[in-house]
Image (cartoon, rainbow, N blue to C red; front, side, top):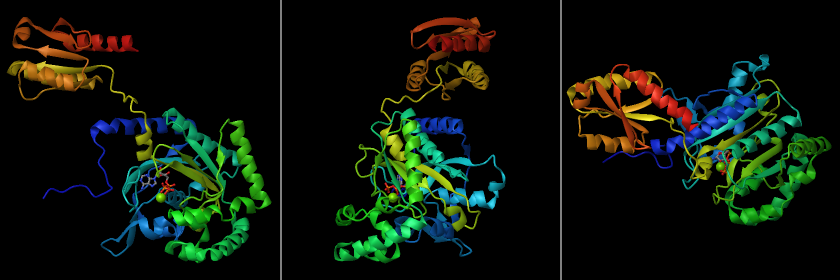
Length: 425
Ligand code: ATP
Ligand code: MG
């Protein structure tokens, strides 16, 4: 029996990879301009890292992590998200002592054992952004602005920004009590998960996907109405900065993020085009996480974007750049093949896309392959041409051709192709 990939874990084939590269290159360019530096963190971590940071009673930790003992019996987890690892790395390498390193981004696969469907997979990819050690609401606004600028640069349509405040421990504690009494009054109607969450982590009920719970939650008290004065001021300040950047937003007091570590401003970028999988990206402040994980008590904020959802939303027309000029070298006969093989390598070293056929097939077959590769030019090295000390360069776009002497052939080709490059731009 043939072996197939694991359900919900997909290959990205060459004909799709261009969009991925486009998304990554736009991210790198924009994030760099915003002062972010790339950090690359491992895919495998000790389970404890995620259990402690994401929260024991979240869906991720309760149901979705890929966790297994390694050969020494140590419990490991395929990362379900990146923030915990970036924080761990920051603490481990004592980066708080290096003021040049405050803003990080990272791109890579995450793993969650969820039910696979459109926009939801078991291996998926995220672009993550994290800012450490800066407490100012200006940074919350900047991170949100960055998310939107990035989506706009990729022409992702109809995004709305949802904004909420998760308060701080001071306002969350009293709120928890009023939420719990509401939940007690409707407890018979809650799903079994939420029955349990009621005592372990009542705020998680806002994240429940069960329809009956969602209806109950719609009538529940919200943290937004219970914020302490400092949190109200802080949220107002974030909104003021967003206003001054011209960002519009919707206040969504029912939005809680799927992870426990958030406080104060949280946000999600929502699309109407992906059904239930409507969040393209989301994030917020998580000031307590660094300390929880044994590091210095430093504030933090960030977001994660789901790349599969982005790719689904990318305009079909989004053209993926191939180098403007592409050459195919068609060789007829053994001597031509030998010379062509050397020429192809030489031109590649001069930064040109060049391909050839290795199987000495007919000119017709080789031209068909050239066509499939969408080359702009074909160089024909035939026996007759070789005997004359020449080769034929065919321009596939204009269907014209010219003969070029073999002597100085490389330079001749380069000057023709690079010249028409410039004409194209
Ligand atoms: P959702 O509510 O859709 O499950 P989430 O709140 O669990 O999302 P986050 O943990 O905030 O998601 O991750 C950030 C982004 O990563 C999401 O907005 C989404 O675009 C993407 N994402 C999350 N889980 C998956 C998945 N299983 N498959 C594909 N993309 C995902
Ligand atoms: Mg989820």
